[in-house]
Amino acid sequence: MLHAAILGAGGMGRLHAKNLSSIDSVSLKAVCDVQESAAAELAESYNARAYTDFEEMLHTEKPDVLFVCLPPFAHHGEVEKAARAGVHIFLEKPLALTEEAACQMVQAVKESGVITQVGYHYRFGGAVRRLCSLIESGEAGRPVLFNARYECNSLHSPWWRKKEQCGSQLLEQAIHLYDMAIYLMGTPVSAMGYMANLCHTHVPDYTIEDVSAAVMRFQSGAFGTITATNCAVPERWENPFTVVFEKVTAHFTDPNHAVFHDTGKEKTEETVVSCDVDMYREEVKAFMESVQAKEPSSCPIEEGLKSLQIVARLAESNGKEVL
Image 1 (tube, rainbow, N blue to C red):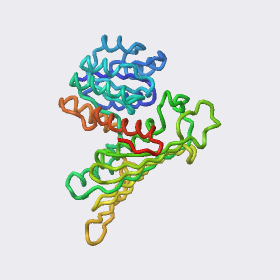
Image 2: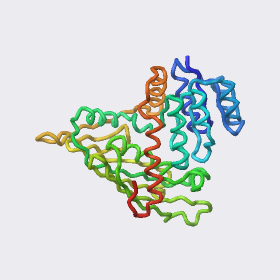
Image 3: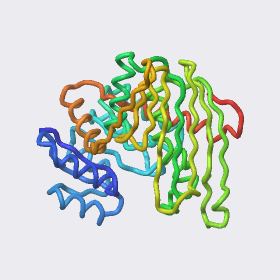
Image 4: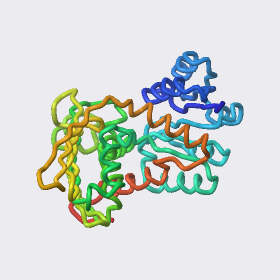
């Protein structure tokens, strides 16, 4: 039986607690949050102990695995401390507010040898997995183009609007699409982008961008474009993307739903993939299996660093090539 602890009793902490409870080989032993009431409420639901002091929880409970569910600004060395204690770590994205802070986390993990996984749940969608199988088998052919957009219209939590606390919409939301681009197309070798606040200049403390556009070129020769905005349809979150390979084109409504076009045959064949994979549960299950097998996860902390580095540099691009 593996003993788990959760740091951060917000929405993601509650979701991961629920999914952990569905795995027989795991027991949630502790929850830590700076808000005592939040930690106590979540801990009580799973017969766990509540803490407001992370180091106390770490030294008292000695968990096997830690789920870090903190917003970007709330990281204060907890990942490094857990790694040095030999605790395997699941981290929600983004890793940190800055590339420097993320690099420190990666270095601590490297030195300790613990298993890590970043919460890029899009990777576990049923339609995404189908495309990955076509890429791995060679049936998809050469990568050509990744095109994606993230659209919403919400003020979210107060901290989300502040650059010094969330970093940017790129870092907090659209980073999922940047991870998809890297995951499916490979390593970017150059990128450039634009960012602006066009619709929220009248909103107090709104200091992040509400529209962005980026172009990337990958090592394979393929290209990518990603746009994001918080000026679209109110209370609707959409993140469709299209992936073009030499022999396959896939139009994704989301990671579970896509229309595949097999263009490598004399007559194009169309396949619809529609499924209801619980991506959050699947990523937790995969992480626990990696820990039990003592093998690297499919999305280690280094993957989280790659996407963070790209969006951090794009945030400073202003039309100039980066990477």
